[in-house]
Image 1 (tube, helix red, strand yellow):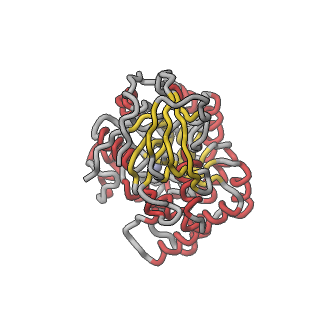
Image 2 (image 1 turned 90 degrees about the vertical axis):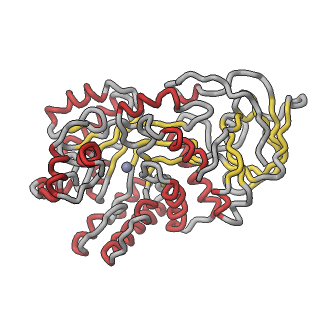
Length: 437
Ligand SMILES: [Zn+2]
């Protein structure tokens, strides 16, 4: 049964800082009575009180209104720390609703167009929408990833055209440079790249590392156009520049060498774990995806968040022997990182695919051997807190934002209950989301 309408939805203007998008001070205290609240490990029966969009301590006088919760199970809303949507006004409402319907309130877009973000500014980070942080233009090499992908989308409406001539044309086109990616091929170009990055006030910079160790060989092979990224010598100065402009640097990595380079450069987040999306690899080259133990230990000790994008790997259509071996290495990397206490978080790397969003967290917990409570913690606590480190989200207690999902059954008994979302409350206000098809 849906909750009653709690408060009129307040008018909120586009806020640069999502933390400001809290309901205005009405002073009214609402009691959400008799629910089962997730405390990080289990569900505890009781009530929560909400005032001005936040949980507060039980008041000494009677609350202004009571919402009966009928013993429903309540968890914090979910996060997705690696997406590429929403990006632009096209289809925005359905993408927003898709996230909200799946219980995802917090989204980290690791690569998008500047124009797309601008179009959406007034529609995001409000009490009735999703909260999104953007990276804007990733920095890569000329002809690398994601230049080819975005240029091919513009030219041919497909990300990886099968025709080699079309791929080369896309890799050489610079039509969308400056909007959806920037290129950096040598250190003398850095000041100009930094000047262009400084036009934006986004909190993240995405740096592209793709088999950096073999970059020179890849560059001479036209069939590998679009499959490379930055050269090793520009990474550290670029990351330093990101930090100087107050941005955190998130690295796209493909191999253990890339991960090592990213750590040496001082990056703040991993957008992938080595081995995540390798379609085919000869056994002789498998070792390059394997994280060495000292590196895994270092990543674990650093506390740097690592998005594994395992849902993407699981979704691969092909199931060849070599791909299964790559997957074995990939999953061994995840377990190694887990053993060294790495901060593993969930991200779908999708443009808007609910199935991957859901599959990612579940697959990750399966690989790590976790229970249902650890699945909830990853989706509802660790990932949202990594996306918005300055915000009090992810916990259902006094002082935190009063945002939560009610579930139709006990997710500690049946994991599928995490998807059986009945109501979505954001900062004390119930969201109205149209049902999906
Ligand atoms: Zn991505």
